[in-house]
Amino acid sequence: MNEVPRLPDESTGLQVLVAPWDSERALLPAPPRLLVREGRIALRGETRGDRDERGVLWLPYAPRVDGDTRQRYAEVHGRRQRLLMARLRCQVCGRPSLHVPGRGTAYLLPYAPPETLLPVREAGEWRYALEANPPVCAEHLRTGPLWCDGLRRVRGWTVAWVLRAPVSGVQGYVYDLDDLERPPVLDYVPRGDPRTGAVVAVQLVRSLERVSVGESRPPGS
Image (cartoon, rainbow, N blue to C red; front, side):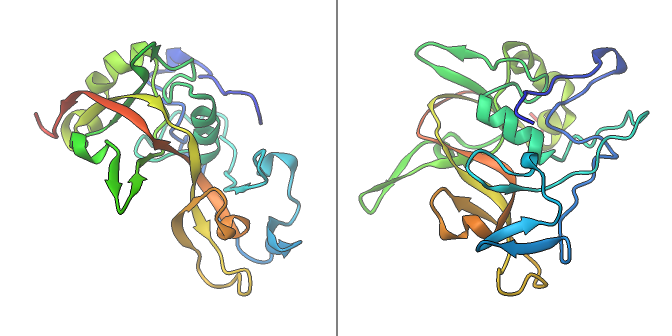
């Protein structure tokens, strides 16, 4: 589970590592599989790979079925996203992301006005943009807007160069430990938050603390 996954076969057409295959369905846990153990949320029959190095529980997925050749590009496979984001690997192919000295690591994001990505000082404290999209390699920084219809026509795209982006928390389903039957709430949980023991994480999040905005294209342009 600690190894960075790679594309299994590039000859079968476009494959995006961070996207789930059709058979890789998220398995949002509920009682009786979900329980509270030692004051934190847990899975019955939990394995070592169900938690990250900080002890956070991650959303399980059904395995890919042999012969499944269809990917859901608009969705994210949370466990692969965590590995790619943690190791700053390309979200498409799993190779090392592009890093340019003095500029930082390349992120190809859905279109965002530059001011929404830059740090803002409010009430004496800095507020940073939060990002869950893993970075990209040089090849997919160049070709991503060409083959990704969602970036090109629907959402547009923005290139962000990031010099500092520490892991700041997770996006996940927060449960009520006193009533696991209550539907969980999808929320951002920063590191050190007391809700960490009650969350089933779906994405690793970084805080964009030193960022510059490069080329950008609004939707439909």
